[in-house]
Length: 466
Image 1 (tube, rainbow, N blue to C red):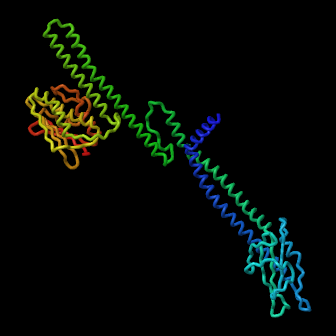
Image 2: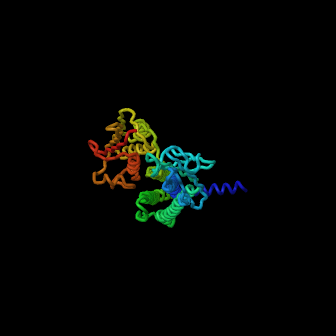
């Protein structure tokens, strides 16, 4: 039972420690209490000095009253009748005891306590012990008319500390009460200020919570203070990225559905034709067309998945190390059979290892599409040359073919998804260059198109070296 209570209390304190309001209030109050603690320490010694000063002034006044009452009679004897006022000025209601001593310059005791301790200097109060009590002592030398050689007397007055300590306590408590009121008011103002200062942040929280899951329009930065506006801008940027990703996914689904609909319908038709055909030759022809359509839709599905993975935010960023020369050689070897069937002259020019960083899988997909496009669009007895070099801190990949090329007026559109040049005889989905651009831009590079010597197309890709 007690463990459960302690755990609940600990959890409550944990939640409080994570509260911005509690953290700010604690910081402000800690600073205030530190400053007030120093002020109270300083005020205690100031009150003590003030109480000593008042006591010393009272002792000095009492000593003067006593000194002025000293007289010399006709016989040359020093006489003293202590005025009651000299002692009554210490009657402040705190039960102080007053002691005095009057002696001549020759050391003769005129009146008072002969063993009263004397201070080291005149007119300066000092603390001494006398008859088991702590007293404040002050001495005053005063000339007396009638004494030979302008003789003087020394008047020493001492008083216990009751009144002095009471005065010090009263002064310190007065200062303490002011400091306490100051802390209370500062705490109240701090709490109200935190409530007012955090209100825009709470409104921002409520505005985010109140939104439906489909609302991603930006929040107005003016709803919070200037210090919190970067947070609102960051939220807006994040929502914009989410919107872009959602739009990309919708486009992908829409395009995929549109592109798959026709091949699937064609496959269904070809399968029906093959099933109904009684002539073996024509049935084999329908089955061959069915296999070709199946390969086409399989390639389209693979390119759609590759394009989806190449889009920003669709995969966790990777930092693989890829040798483009080695990857290009392996991909060319994989396409060698197809190149031989079409009697293509395929070559690779490489200066040695060319190392780049990034997503190794997507970089290989980019090379596959570059080489596949070049082979696909090169005519029979054509040529395809792949070059991998380094220049100015960048890896440079060029793929040159002697195919029909791309008109300069359409070189921007061919990077769009599913865009195909009118009159193109080769089968394709229109996704190859779109995949290449997504991968290259995701790796921080650039891709450009140019004309090959003697006709054809040159695709140039620049990537930062690892």
